[in-house]
Structures are given as C-alpha cells and as structure tokens.
Length: 329
Ligand code: BMA
Image (tube, rainbow, N blue to C red; front, side):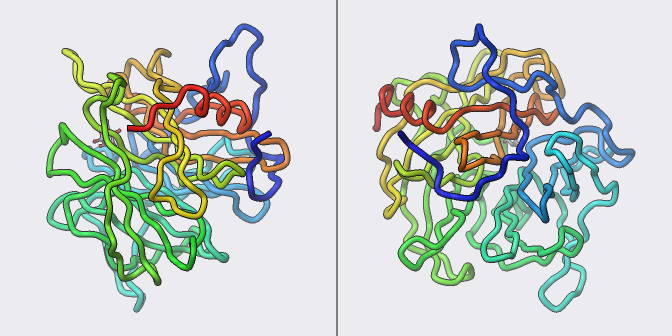
C-alpha cells in the first residue's frame, strides 16, 4: 500500500468518489470554488496555489486585473474552499525592503520549507522567466534572485532538500504561446546558485493528450513510491490548445529519474467551467493539499483561464493506476 510521507491534515477539502465514477480523479461537486469577478480588482482568479497555514490555509492567487494583466494576490481560507482574497495585489519588496514590483506575474506555486513559504511564478525578465520569492505571513512578500535565465515557465520547487540539494523543475519556452515544451530539472545548494540542468521528461510518446508540450504542476508529493508529480499536458487541436492533467512518479533519492509515467490523462476538460470561459479547454493544476493519515489529495486547478476548481484522488489508488498504466519514454 502506497502512502504519503508528510503530516496528517484532516481539514483539507474532501468528497468521496461518486458511486458511478470510474475515474481515478474526480471533481468537487461545488466547483468552481472561485467564479468570475471575485474581487473588484480582478475579473478572473485561476491557476493558483494554496498551502496549510496556521491551522487553516493561505495562498497566492493569479488574478487577471481589469486591464487584462496577470497579477498575484494573496488570500486566506479556513476550509480551503471559501477563499478570502486580498483585493490589493501583492506588493513585492527586495531583500532590503525596497519596492520590487513585477510587470506581470502568473501561475504561482507555493511551498513551505522550514517555516518559510517560497513562491515561484512566471515573471517578466525581458520575457517570461521563473520568479522566486518568499513570505512568512502572506502579508510581506520578498523577491529573491530569479533562479534561471529567460525564457522559462512553470517553475516548481521540491519541498525539501534531496541529498543536500534543492531541486527546481521548469519548462524552457519562448516569448509567446510556446508550441513546444519539456520539463527540465536544476539543482542548487542554497536556492541562489542553480546548475546541473538536465532534461527530465518530454512531450508526446503515444500520448496525444500531451503531444504539444508539458509543464510541471503542483509541488511534488513525497510518497513511499517516490515523488508523485501531477503535471499538465497540452494537445493542439483545430480549435486551439487543450490542457489536461497527468501524473508521473520520480525516484525519491534521485528526482532526475522517472520511474513511472501514466500514459493517459487523469482529468481533461469536460465540464462547462473547463470547456467554456476566457480560454476554453484548460485544466491547469498549480497546488495540492494532502492528508498523509488518509492518503487524500485535493488538487487545485485553474479551469478555462477563468475559474478555480478542485479535484480529488486517493494516493494508493492513483499510484497503483500510474504503475499499472505506465510508459516511460
Ligand atoms: C499557458 C499559461 C497559463 C494558461 C495556459 C492556457 O501558456 O499562460 O497561465 O492557463 O497558457 O491559456
């Protein structure tokens, strides 16, 4: 039986799998949890990250302002479902406390390491690049040096050092709606100096659902079988890109090694809130909450670049499914 290595967190959102559901991942019946225009300053809040914080939850949320610009907002939640968003965008400062604004910022991921919450996002460094920052209270947010050169997106940190090194996943890209993309992995001794960059996994194979590009999703979950990483896979259709959710297991002691890779998607846009919106047919996961005691996992994903939604799975079932339907290529 595969289990999560981590803390018990019985307060995460959860619903049992509906009786007639044959899938390994199922949607929250109250989706979407964030609708259009949730705050006066943002029309759409999606592709967002939430973490356990002081007995409840806090997060960094992508909100597209009413001038259309992607921006990060902070928020708090008692139950992980009803989100209290701060209507003022995050005001970043540098390490000396001076204003360090972002011109745009999107697709945040958040994780805690030793009491500090690190944020990665897609930042503007003369084009898309990986932003890195930190907070301890979700009120003051401090920018750290960008870890990688442009152009890059989907920067995702591992939640602890592995054999003395931090690891960062990323997806080198270009300045546009990149029609290609693979996941690479970089190492650092100190979160400042990053190197030993290497290819981790690519698009395609037999999977048309991930034929165009892939990108890391939420922060990987440590399990007895290895690192469980959900990611997005993109296919190109006559009607534009379609973003689905897939999963892979990486070696616990060497996350540069793919052990198992699910050949099919776990979730693809089907519901109206996923197929109709600002950008149709997008399910874009950026966070997961989990309860190590029960193996419950709640995945937060942006739907149609408009809404925030939740899907559930159970660690033992999802790992067994990945292992018995795996193609590593
Ligand atoms: C990607 C990112 C995501 C977005 C997706 C679909 O390039 O910009 O934020 O959800 O496209 O539009």
